[in-house]
Length: 492
Image 1 (cartoon, helix red, strand yellow):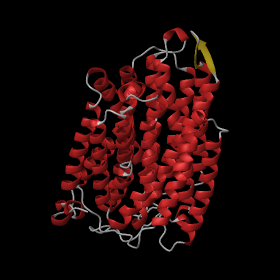
Image 2 (cartoon, rainbow, N blue to C red):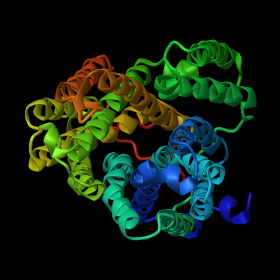
Image 3 (cartoon, one colour):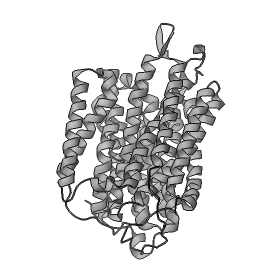
Image 4 (cartoon, helix red, strand yellow):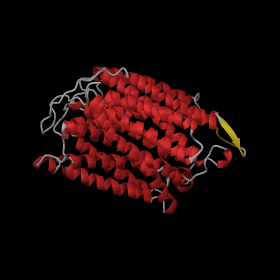
């Protein structure tokens, strides 16, 4: 590891870090990483021609990112707790820049998949940033700052889509990745100069067997879910991978419970506050993806269908962009509610807002402004929930476990998203209408997916009611980091 990665920021050694600067830099890093998730969307239909490959093969440019992110998030979170969260944050950004450069030079499928996998390995930036905030910021700044950091995931995705579509429409598609590399380099420099390294360490030895087991289990599970529709849900490959996922993950759990220094402390994750927060996160991840799947298709389908709006990908990005701004604005409101009522209430409010947004979408889907309104309402709900989730997690775990705990919570949301993608794909493939000899998803199919999205949000609300009440503490951690768990939020 280079000296630059190993040494704390100058701000952390010579003077207390400036909270505003730390929050701004970490949020920027989160936005840059979330841009990576939407960067390739405008060129996905063109990838077979651009990379001289079959469509089924170019789909791996998306799948590789998903798989790499699922493996990296819990592993890098644990490494951050052990060896330094800022250090692992910098390493994650280096991987993002490296992957962007590889994709920027790619003219064939293999380097594109490699580059996208490297980009996916940077997915732990947001949970690491949230954990750094807990160690570096005054307690009265924590709720608002973590809410903003969480919102950066949605902000980057919402703002990145129209920008990526504009670049892809007007310039060479490689520029998308050169821009990503440049933004990553800027984020690296700013983190190096401004963000302090925490002195809170978990210590111990890294659980290599646990990390390999979790990686193998997650890859098997996500391949089953994401590729089952292409391979056939009853095919030998799908069933074999599904069975392997179950066996591997059960064996992994057995190992983790007996390991003296596990990758994931399953006893901590079994605490009611952590357990029900993670279960609610799965439901929320499921719910949130429904919008990402339905709204772009409604906007792009031909007007002649009677329910499509016939818009371009650039128009899709512009319609969804206000959602990112709403999420950022709601992060401040979310923090205020958390301080007054506690993160449990904030989470429940957010889940209800998301459900209401899907309810609106079922009856309002015939005009562009309808979809702008729906995306903003759902974005407001996401802003609430994304702010509450890390507060709930950090209120229940030791400071030496925040990196791993936040990363696991992020993974839970990703799993929910993957399940939603698979289920929505099945529904839209079955509920179709004939359009000039081509089967397109029907209007009722979209409404069913939106109803399921609303149901998932209501399920998240129901699960959140089981989260225990939190006790409010006002103790201030010392300058070099907290020495014991600090709970975030007030009484519920």
